[in-house]
Image (cartoon, rainbow, N blue to C red; front, side):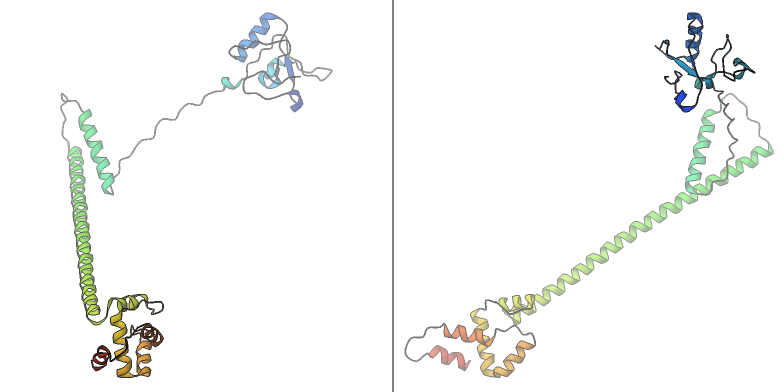
Length: 269
């Protein structure tokens, strides 16, 4: 047997509900179909409704066979659209409290302006002691709002000034750092050569391309101090080439036969 034909109902005989077929009489069938209220739908000989849609008065009472059977004039009246809609509660009375913050005062002022716009011009307002007290409270609230707005403005000005001061401090520190860097670079250029400065930056002397000037100074230091003192300078991170690299550079030089006056002048210096 098919399920219930009512809109939104999924009841069926398999779920334990008693199902009733639409009557064969065309007039009664029209009445049942009108109660179902489905647009563009017509019941067939196999259309059914479940027991939920019939009131208890439409069922036969005290049957001997114990079956549930509808009366002849039974009509389905219980559907989902026939539920009683509960009435809406009246709105609660709104109590306007004293504004506790800047936002509350702004909202309060908006309410005052709305009240002023809504009051007609031809009504004569009678002043009473209660109205005077309310007006004084309104004035106090407006004064509080003005004070709060002034405080907010002052805070914003202080924040802007603090930001400008911080930026100025950072710029001064940057200038000092640049000046110190320039001084240190000038001192390094006066003491060392470019290849020696590169060795200091790398913190390594391996695989360096030493200039002829640096090799010349290394030879002078070696003959002036000795090999042990030369090695001591290198251990103290002085930018100098290894003695092996100095020897290799000297081995690669080609000398013509005769007296080398340049070498004598070199050692004299």
